[in-house]
Image (cartoon, rainbow, N blue to C red; front, side, top):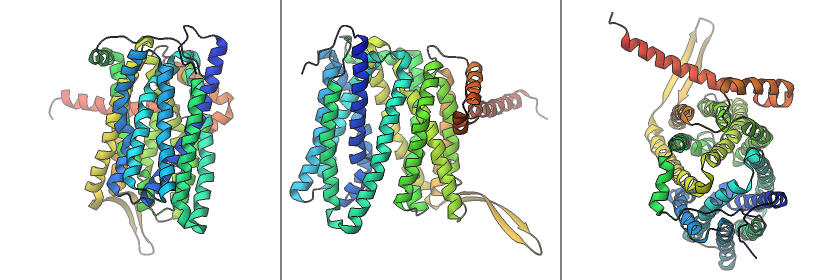
Length: 497
């Protein structure tokens, strides 16, 4: 099969490429659904994994991001991002099938075997991902970047929700009726994932690539280029601070629900699906707004909402009434899905947009490597903080005493996980302030964007129900910070009394 780049793409080439990339995305989602998340953890536990090995499994995708440097070297040598992406994606899916076949062949396996082959899965995925991003930046017209990826994300997330429900029901049935075949079921999942992943690589191979040439300069010199670009450096600082803050708290939400609240796993799956459905329903809206206005505006609107969701986690479980806690969890997951859809879409798009076309792969490599380091540091610090606050609590109560009635109301009740959530929310709020320093091409003034969005929301009740007046959160948060800064300045210049 010929995988050579083309000097120019026709309209038909672009349309074919957009279809093939969506089909590859669906295949990739099948792979992720069958071998990732809760299913991977469950299989690892069946193989006898301890906590350190579970943590290593979670860290593998971030650790292997360092090897994206190989992608730059390969693109410089062969000037063929399409071939590199397709070949590496195929190589990434083969270890999954090997894992499943080994478990089926020897009626078992070991956790070390799982970690070993998953390392190569994530290794080739990382090398492929960078050249894929650069390829997509050149193939997809910039004016439709947001709308296209939002549509692709809607399709993949819808498939993920459907598969999660089906696989969860299947596993529950096997655990209750045929527990001896549970590990065999996971092995079959891995074999299917490997086969479907190879089909996805075939679809991707049919997408065209416009010819591009990467500079032959020394690798170290190339890697310094993005850091010399002041605007891109500002994006790196914001993105790194943001993922670091979030990863202090977000990896421990599930742990809190399982250990702190004692919720059944089925409840957690349902809550996750609620978040995914909320994300799916709003992706198209965020994509349209990001294309028409700016990605910065979308982040400025959706990020404060997500911060409020993190803060809301601190109030879950204060009272023992289960339906109140579940109602709060539903609201948190709903608005988390809405806000993260806008945040993730815009962070991806703004990175593609600020990377110069001729050196996009270098810029994206530096961005992915730097943010991966901070993404890995976040949960490590979160684990240390969780241990530190394990035996520390803070309670603020309101008491009413009278001859006929005594009542104590809990206003705040902080313990191990709640401290963690508040720290993460505070650091995320600080990181959000760094967004204003990033400049985006075609950026529309905030007041204009808000006025247009309000008009759009008034004319579309469906959107209004979903996001209401969320656009005011950014102003409120900034006003609080500015007022605090103003008070600090005033107190520092006023005479002593």
